[in-house]
Length: 171
Image 1 (cartoon, rainbow, N blue to C red):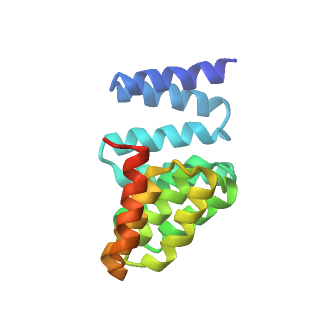
Image 2 (image 1 turned 90 degrees about the horizontal axis):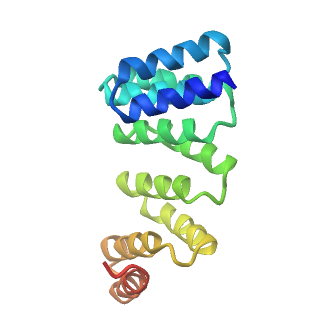
């Protein structure tokens, strides 16, 4: 349909770094239907590329207001708030994980944020959850090893976790 075509054209224009054209396509789609969470999400990505963080946040926020179950909007808001160590990051990551509990992106982002704010003990259940979903999640093994090394001085367990990561992804 026409709305899908306009949104796809916006993605293409964005990919070609033609932000004005990308925004024009999105705005045209939104003029026909203001309830398109992907359109607001794309506006957020464009504003991020244009270094306009406040508009990006506003657009991502609108994406989840239009659709309270819009996973990608929560992830982006979590990422943005995590960069400034805001507790709102946890709220957005928690909602994303509630929506898609087996999605590694939300679990990983939340675990990295918890590491960043030095809540290391809270990361272990997330790594276990990731590994229960995919035992080959080398990044979960690696980050678990890092936490064991840095916070617990559990060298043997840290080495084991690092070895598991290297067995899966030896590069």
